[in-house]
Image (cartoon, rainbow, N blue to C red; front, side, top):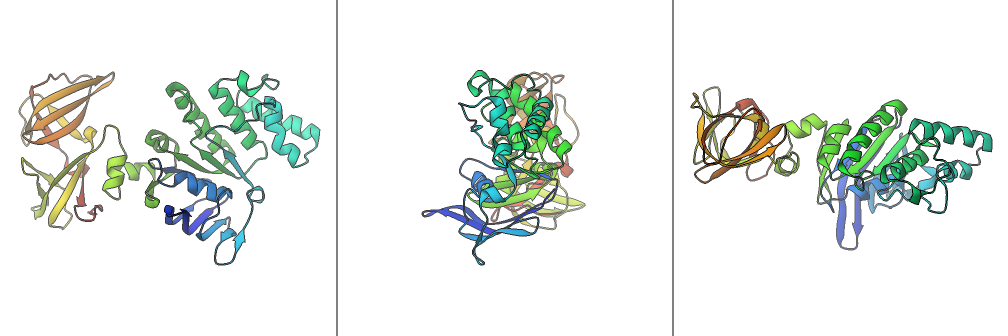
Amino acid sequence: MQRIELRHVTKRFGKTVAVDDVSLTIEPGSFLTILGPSGCGKTTILRMIAGLEEPDAGEILIDGRPVFSRAESIFVPAAERGLGMVFQSYALWPHMTVYQNVAFGLEMARMPKAQIRQRVSEILADLQMAGMEDRYPQELSGGQQQRVALARMLAPKPSIFLLDEPLSNLDARLRMDMRSELKRLHRDTHATAVYVTHDQLEALTMSTHVAVMCAGRLQQLASPDEVYRYPANLFVADFIGSPKVNLLEGYARPAAGGTRVDLGTFSLEALPVWAEGAVVAAIRPEDVQLSTEPVAGGVEFSVYSVLPAGSEAIVNVRCRETMLTVKVGRGTRVDMDQTVWLIFDPRSINLYDKASGLLIAA
């Protein structure tokens, strides 16, 4: 297990700043996912850790050893960093068999042939690929090619895994299976893993920590639960979650035992934040209770649309000009244009400063 540190790392491509003054520490044995939309700089960070891109400024350290430093003119080549990497396209040699692809790195390291055979057999068995040693990549399914790419990475026993959107080419069912396998693999190897994706479900289900990126800058680094429950700013709040979070502009003022937020069409109670002014209230769809009968403290809405989704349903409701999304269980039956009442839990409402977009801490 090794620690990875990025200190004020910047990378430019011409006039475009792909990574802008990013600092983060990846603890030994952790599974860090770098999450963000296309073009946010997440793959560039991974490639700089791997040594495939050279930063323009800053430092990168692996287990305390500088592998890049602009100030000290240090750049350690990728082959000398002791990392394993899986690419989005798998990058398997099409003219080599499964065995040859997995053994390639071991042969380059001049490992004895008997040890190579034993190591390749062990890895393929662990990944349920035993008996496929003589097949070529074009004879394999997408999931099997993914396993070969993982086996090739694992064969030299690297202490750091780098994975660049490795599941994006798989269908939904296979992605789910491979998430489970990768999580188990990480636990069994105790390696430090850095995983790049734009899929928030992958980030929230697989990671010990999530680094959310936007426009080359780090927005938040925290556990998946903290990123989901307490997004650091409005970008993170809006980017994380499906269906998307409800964002309502209003004016906050202190009230007895809490904070009263006036949203124009109605008002709600939030936890005390000792702030007064223009805010944005963020409410997850699953944190809103929906009642088909009048209830004390409930706000009256009209059902705009109902989107059944098997075990749950997404209900869009309207109160004059305000639209909200609510997630309900399949036991709740509502119809379009039906009157319903919503109940808001003050503990589940996050308030953001409207001007800065930053979370107002309680």
